[in-house]
Image 1 (tube, rainbow, N blue to C red):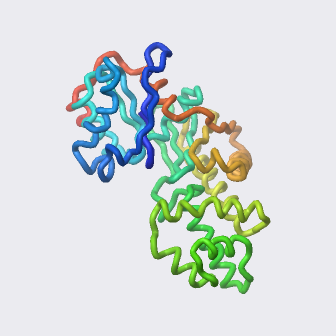
Image 2 (tube, rainbow, N blue to C red):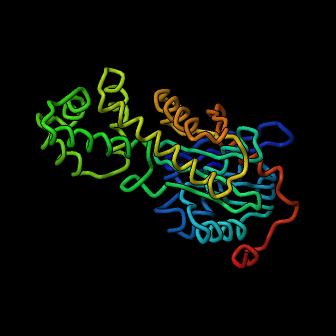
Length: 301
């Protein structure tokens, strides 16, 4: 299972035969945050009930929102309480390397949020970024919008006339000056509202806006810096796997990210994931032990 911010992808296989391949809105079963409602795990696992035997099969869940050790341990305990077979829950970014066929890789997710995830040789989890679109998440759709508006405001303060980026943003909000844009943009600081502006940033860059191009390039450079941070902390592997709606659908960002990772001089090979991340969950599930850990073993681990 791959739980994203907007959708949940469920894939059940039996010796390579696909028994279920289904996506649902995460809001159909998740009430509030992943750990906010005790029944979230029960409603999630109910998605497996249509396939006989799935409730006892090895299960791996990659979940958006498992960003700390205590969150991961708590959700694992809740799943173990309700699933009959061996199960493991990890951050959804951890699915990317296995989905690409790598045992060890640095994963970079760039979509509605962004984060860099890797492991040390001893299995310790390493992360960079992923602190939410208001503060972090470079390259994500809402963060690109945030930085685009900041760039437009900085150019205005420098006395520049509105360029293509400013004009597209002002037209989107139905305002005719940059000051009004700042008010309109900050009135609704919501992920979906800001995220909807990301295509305008790329459109402006493609139309020749130096501001928009610099916003995209700066985001790629910050993401590459995150890769450098986890590498310096001992990340295993020499491959970087990128996935997520923004980096997958916007070649400008992927090209810039590849260039900045190359500039680190670490000998890392960059790949764009071309299969659903849930494939990584299946790959990890195949490696699970045959016995299911108890709820208490998760809580005490």
